[in-house]
View 1 (cartoon, rainbow, N blue to C red):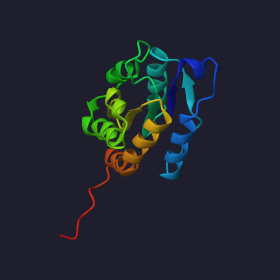
View 2 (tube, rainbow, N blue to C red):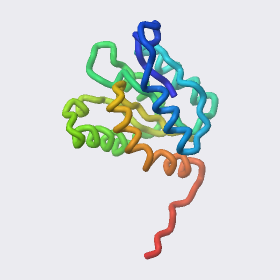
View 3 (cartoon, rainbow, N blue to C red):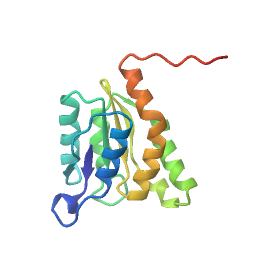
Length: 157
């Protein structure tokens, strides 16, 4: 769990999105440490790479996905992933816009597979995180299971 925020990393204010994500991941059965709060840009890439090197099943980031000049999370994430999962990122943006937040379309967050881990970039706003988590609740546990060799559930049909 990586928080990209120059102001939170500098201690100007306390991050409020990391705890939401940690709580959700824990509720879905993942073992999660404390959120790592870093400045925007390359520190985010380094934190993602460190988590992947530790062998985690998933890395979720928050922040740095907008169009502000310092928002660089997608740029530092892309080189770390082997395969993108564009439908996941599209579903999160669609959820936000459907909820009446047209600016959700400005999020440039990525989702993908890095080795045997899922990596997902969420926006930095509480609302964007909640929308993203609503989508991930249905997807992330299944995606992790698939990467660990799980089989597709059989339908009754």
